[in-house]
Length: 525
Image (tube, rainbow, N blue to C red; front, side, top):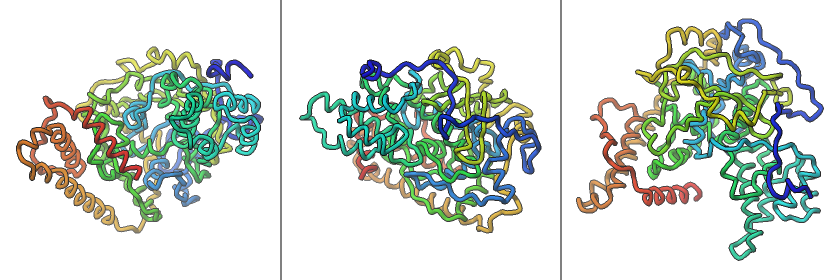
C-alpha cells in the first residue's frame, strides 16, 4: 500500500482546478456571453455574463414557471425564492437593496465551523487508490470495500454502508476499532451535511485522506470549504434547467433568519448566546403551495433597506468575534470546486459603507449552461495564497468607512447597481392574484405567538420570590436578552427603551451548557 494513504493526506500540488461534473473527457468551452440589455435589467451585461441561462430570465420571459427546487432534508420554501436571486459570477444575492451574500463570518457564527486552516485540497483518487484508502483507514475487508465502491460509483461509499459497519461500536472495543468508527462517523457527517450530493445517500472516500489523523482534523478550514461547495451548488440551482439544490441548506436558511425578520421562525428560548447561531431558531414546517412561493417572490421584489438586518451579529461580537480572514479576497476551495469570494461587494454586512466594487474575479474558462452537466467552471487557485490569507485581505481603504445608517452606500452605488442587475424576478404582467393581506395576517399571528413566548419567559420570574431571582441572575439576564430580541422581531416602536446589556455578565458557561443540552435533547426528540 502507498505510504501517503496510510500515514496522512496526500499533498496537493498548486494547480488550477476545474469542477467537471460530466466526466474526465468533457470539454470546457467558453461561456456563451450575454451581450445585450435584458428587459427588466441588466442593461450593462459586463457582470452577469451567463444571465441568458438564469432562472430569472426564464421567469421574466414566461418560458418557465420554475417548479420549486427540491431541497433534501429541508421543508423551507423561502430558499428557492432567494436562489432565484443568486448570481454565480459574483456569488451574491442580487436584491432590490443591493448585493448580499453568505460570508465566512456567517459560516463561523451560524455553524461554528473553522474558517481558518489548511485548504481542503486532496489529489484526485483513482479507483485503486480509493479502495486502498478505505481499507487502510477504516480497516474493512478488501472484498467488501471493492464491492461497495463498485456499487456506489464515483469512488464513493453509501452512508448506510458506513452506519452498518460501525453502528455497534462501544467503549469496550479496541482503541483502533473506536478510532475507525470515529473516522467513519466524521465521513458520514460530511456526506450527510456539508458536502451532500443530489443522492444524499453517499460520500466520496477522498475525504478520508483528511480524517486519517484524528488529532489534525480541526486544522482544516472546513467552513471555507463548505462555503465554496455551497456557492457552486447555488450557482447550479440558479440555472433554468435545474430542479434540485444540494449542499448544506441549513447555512443559507440560518442566514436568511439572521438578516430578514419577516422570514424568521420562533426564537429558541433556551439558546445560550455563546453557541452557534444555528441553535438560535426552532425549525418550522412550511406549506409548499405555489401561491405562497409566488408571494415570497413578490415580497422580495418589494424589499426595502429597512427590511434588512445588515449587521446581525453586532451585539454578540464578545462571543462571536469577526475573524480577520472574513475580509480575504480571492478563491475558496473544496476538492475540485473552486469559487471566488468577494467581501468588497457586501461591506454593509460588516458595518461599512458600501462602495462600487471592482469587477468580480473571472474564471479562466467557463460554461454556465442551463443544466448542471453544462455547468463547468475553472478558476485559478493556489493553496499558498489561501495559506497566506492575511496577505490577501481587503485594505483599509477598500473596507470603506463605518456606516451612520446600516444601509449606507456611496453616492451613485444604487444607480450603478441597477444597470448591472435584474432588480425584479416577477414580471409585472404576471403578478399573483393572492391577497397580500394573507401574508400580513401571518405576521399578526407571529406577533401573537411572540407575545405568548414573552409571557412564558417572564411569568416564572414574576411568580418567583426575590431570593430565588437573585440566586439565578444568569437566567434573568438571559430572559431579558430573549425578550429584547422578541420585541425587536415584532417591530414594536411603542415599547420603552431596551435595557442595556453593558455592565452585566453573560450567562455562565455552566448555564449555557444546560441550555445547549436541553435544546439538543428537544431537537432530536
